[in-house]
Image (cartoon, rainbow, N blue to C red):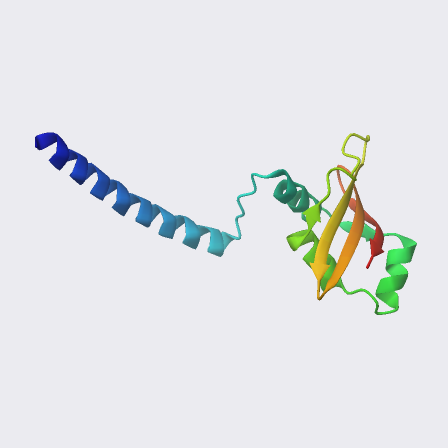
Length: 126
């Protein structure tokens, strides 16, 4: 009987500790903007977002003609899915990634060249 009582106290304390830990980590991540990216898709998009962006002539023309907005690009880099089968992840020095996202009933594809110190958006298609 003593073992079951000790096990009950242990599980009760563990549950309370997990609740406090989850509240603490949630608050900490909201205040500082910390993200926990463990999967390849999330890590790739976070790496691209952390670098200065530049645009190809075609993409710059779409931005100038108001066909493309910076919010659309931010949406792709936040909510998009990297298609690693179509991407060239072994090229040196810049890797090329194909990012797909669904926006308002439209499927979009963005091609990004991810260099060590910058990211270059080569193509946007809807």
